[in-house]
Image (cartoon, rainbow, N blue to C red):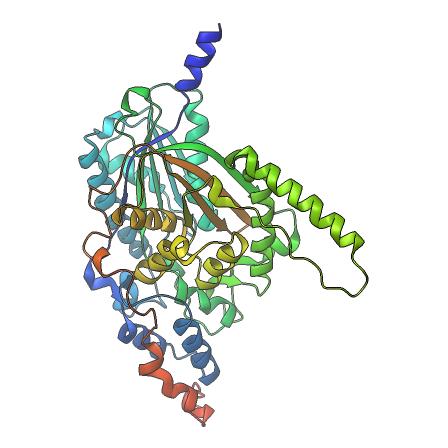
Length: 452
């Protein structure tokens, strides 16, 4: 009975065999020139909105080679069609899934579980049905379609697979994560909604997971633990990220000013739960002792005396690499301060934001791809992934690297030698900085219609 229990546990492990990050074609690159044309094309913007966008783009940390949906290159961002959404998703599905299956030498008929997460759009037939039809998956494939989960959906999908693997032996799971920007490009003037246009970019990732112990030698990563934190019961957290319409009826993604505070609160609660699972006992004991000493000393200190610094837990005692969601420069900086990380630790997230932008739930895998392309991932290393999403959610997990990685090419292969660049300064200010010097607000005002 003891052997059966141990043997059963070995079949419940969750391994990543391979993953493929989508790299759109070069004709979808959004550089400074393209960004300026899209902004100037929006007749709903005034001078103040132009200045706001200028500051947002310059300080975003996004570079010159990110990718956008085809509708903005065709000038159709105000009138997207259903076919625009379908075409965008098909381009991603056919490229990434096809490459992943071919490289892994896995036939589509061998897939037992399919999990797809695209938060901002749902169609009939569903997006998983599109994949099943194109690749002719089996009739008994277990299908899960996630929407509305935001940027944290990728780890939620992994968690679903992890739980399924506890019941089904020798299974393959295909996880597909992306975001549809075509029907969600905001063409209005609401600052809280137009900010999303500056941050979000096109991308996606397909992952192949298994619990076959016989394939452990081929696997790249092994899941050690996963923790999900959901603050949807709190009104402030629930309302900080919302898909809604503005006063003119234009749909978009609304971001509240309370978002940083909400994200910090979710991060603290998530770390409180995952920390004992991933750090060695000696570090937990050290932190506990230092905390007690600091608390005792603060009680003895005289009134008005300077307070001693708070004790900081050292996450590097149990984590070698930090895979941080590229939600923006402020998000990366905030996590770096909270976890006391160095610039070397934050480099993968910063470079991913610069090269690919915020690709929503798939951004974690571009960060992992950067580490792999730089040959940082060695056998036995531990990688901590952290993501945030609307609701409000904070999810994190720890992976163990099972073999030295970096031999296979990925989305970073053709540009990895140029990273990190000498400067991350965005040239948008140099080209469009004259907006800040414009004295006449009427220059950008929308002309009022003449009476008929």
